[in-house]
Length: 221
Ligand SMILES: Nc1nc2c(ncn2[C@@H]2O[C@H](COP(=O)(O)OP(=O)(O)OP(=O)(O)O)[C@@H](O)[C@H]2O)c(=O)[nH]1
Image (cartoon, rainbow, N blue to C red; front, side, top):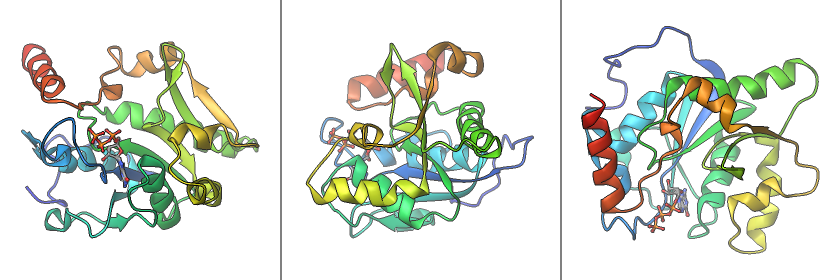
């Protein structure tokens, strides 16, 4: 299945004027095989995530480390400018390349992303902008802890991320803690209104986690 094939499920609402950024430049050491290419009923996991994101975001970009591994999928591809520096480097490249002022970032190893969650997070950023009180990020909390691998970031954070990367490898969290960065923290209870089991926040890092995810999917039909 190639990118651009019409979604079998379709989507009732039109995509929002925002970008979707899929971080796919990791090394998958714990999985022992490329997480982006794990097989799903909708094709490789990366394609499944991209198609889910496309229901919400008018643009979807995949960010990989050079030289780029996913050209064969036909997805719009961006390469890290700070290779080997982790997810913040992927976010930085995505923010620099994206067309829209806000981008929803998703890790390529999140098989349960729900379009309703993607839309809910992006709408928080767009609504704040409309109210005249723009924010730089919209980040879910789970058990009181930030989930920065499924979050909205403003394009204006690109130079902030670049300054952090120039200091070396830094966690995504460092961007949210940078001076002046305005964040909407989304309560777990609010997220559960659109995703009761918080499946959108599941990421699969190991073969055991992948097997558990597949079992859970099978048992829920
Ligand atoms: N573009 C880009 N994405 C990255 C980079 N490092 C990690 N990611 C992505 O960020 C997300 C979270 O990565 P991790 O699961 O922490 O790391 P990983 O390298 O994929 O996996 P491990 O090797 O098992 O730690 C995944 O979607 C990765 O593909 C990077 O240097 N560049």
